[in-house]
Length: 598
Image (cartoon, rainbow, N blue to C red):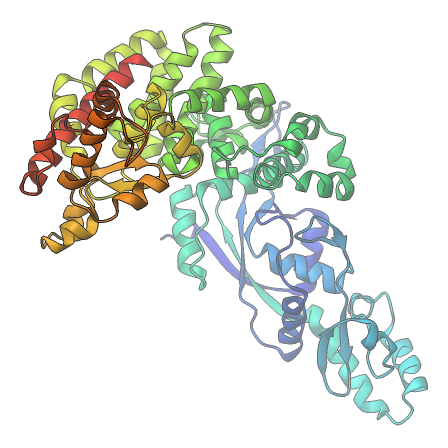
């Protein structure tokens, strides 16, 4: 790597603090709120006092941007690693308050025992103990002069050696003269290179994502409201998981509580839907791609820096318009009507429980598609069908499982270039051919992975089509999925294990059905031919012994809905492999019918 890519220098703590205070180094709040325990702040102060190394902080310089008048604005250094250490320094030395994990603004006081040279987090006991200096902040910062501190300390601790006390206070104030390493990355590095540098330097093995870098750029920009936008993204994602956060934000961040963002997300305070709990990476990706017609978050970082991709220069106007577009995208994402209608579409496709959705990328792009079509086409009645089909197609074909960003970039550009109905029809013709349904999907169902996307799609098909659970008269598969019902081995597991079959064989998804718990318990380890004989028999006698079905036509309907054989002889022990083979074909056929019915 050339020497121009980054520079490594040691700076005095007081220099770093001055840069932070002046805005030369912008703290982007990647990890919001302050997550360090107070004891870690104490340990940092002790390390600096002892002269121990405290690691590096990493900053990525924003490019200088061209202004409308032809001049240039110098880019700031954006802190991408070391926020917690810098925040700890500001808390302990500059007496600045921090926002804790409950979003409450608190003051962390670090106490110092000058004789024992010990640091502790201040508490009521230390406050009463005259041998402690209860707050090092005003002393190190110079707000309190050390000779005055010494005089007052000696007055209440007359046995103290005066020279020793002055020596210890000098050593304490010298913390500002201790050094910390700053690695400054060049603005023209791409995200992949920045990530690689970060991983190699960071001994903890922490990996920052492209979304982290985008959040850095957003939060560091106060000129165009990026700091507030960053909070909107963070707060929405917290509230989606924990609605009770609404009250904490309302109480502890009153300035944000007055914004349009907070008003737009107010509905979350009473929302317990968990089908889609987006993280900030998801929210950023959806807002960005739906608004900018680009799929790579690296491009977002460039645009937020003002990059002109044609001239390869940086312009203030592009930076400003990019922040405005992203702001609108975030507001669209968190809009109650949009969010709830999108989830209604996903649920209506049969994916009724979050455990069924194994691809977050497929879910994200479905929301991107919904927002874009809604914006471009208004109340076009086909939007819901299109979004359902695109989502299920993505699940079935693993569309975003490999190189998802490249595929999203390709898809959003194609959607932007032609009528969506035509595009979808062409993709269906290419990827959902007869061979896919009769061969590819059947082969994909030859798996023992219960979390297989195609098996989840089969369950979604059953939920969508209103199928009843295996041997159930009234309880549907949808009900069982919603209430986490039992999965039953048609050929019981222990029965097959006694036949010498391996886990990969007896746990084939084609051997699974959803069944009521009481039925599952009654079946136990009985061979399928045995318990199915009971079922067929009760349809003749009308006396229910296993499940509630006592009508032969209802039994046939139930077996067909669950893609199971209609004849008793098909459940013979020696026909297990044939059973699996035939059921995979039937399952694939059901998924096909379901897809085209969406």
